[in-house]
Image (tube, rainbow, N blue to C red; front, side):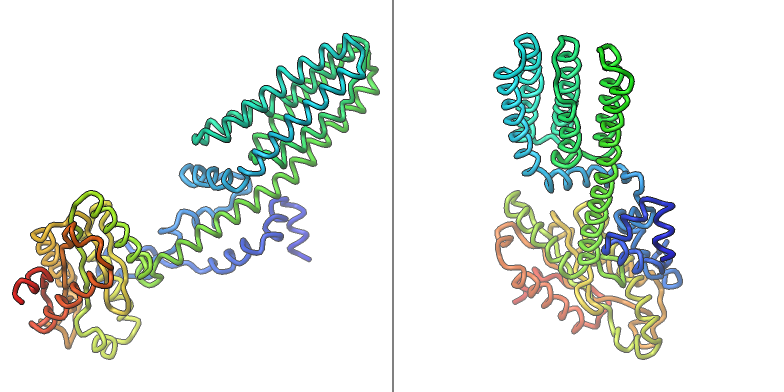
Length: 434
């Protein structure tokens, strides 16, 4: 009951009550942690999800005004259009047919002067704009052009209907104004337009028509009566459209946050096993197409089980976060990626890395972790270290299975461990030695 009373005072709360996904996310996100600022063991706190996910940040801030930050808004608009595209195209065709039938009805039953006026507006203004909008949304890929076409068709339809009504009154005829109410709900719920844009179109056109009625012979009571129903339709449609768009935005954020959580390792904040393997697959496809190599690395924290047993699992988690951050600091190029492969193992991908580049990166990875200077009683030289197996996949082998390629890097990793750990071994060199 207190929640419902609060919702009455804050209308957007109603949408939150109706949207279970939004409520679940809100409950899950009450506790946040500190964003890591560096890779040292003292500062290797669990990463705050909101620092990594703009969608989660937006969800926590809210969106009562139906607006996201710029990058998310663009993503939402494209998603929202895909959600409503088929219905919008069908509705435009149905709208063109409906106004064509209205024009036929006027030509058959309205007085000649009134019919001549209304038929011209219905066919040359309204139907033409609707067909034009349909062609744009059907064959043009630009979201901005699609939105502009829908906006133009909306203004032409509603304003054209109002002008036809006013003109018929001036010519001594009569045209039902209720058709404008149908168009208002048509714009709100069938074209996939966003709420605020539709609201302002409907409101401004209705104000224009309300003022234009004063030029006719309608009495003040009739004008007031018609205006009451028109503006009530604008308000009621706006409330319904607001609730639907609010829930759509919540659904969009929920989907994106779920994708983020599925692709991100919660402990380290790096890509999950699934995400890093997908990244490797994409890199290999690109390498096969562009005829370039791909560097891949399997990284294992030396004697990590003994580290956990000696310093406890909380310190072990901090150690993994620090190692992940150090490795990510070495692979900085836009397409480079370091993800958690499982347990204390990480997989790194470096598209375009030649054998010489792979060898250099492998040495730098070992040095970066050693420079963390994390004490390890049972480690190499008394501190945490890593063993690295790397492989520069030539373009000719990019079509092979990832399992086969990872096995080669894994063999190099075990060669590094067998040689004393805290070092890098190249799978290419290992194969040549054989």
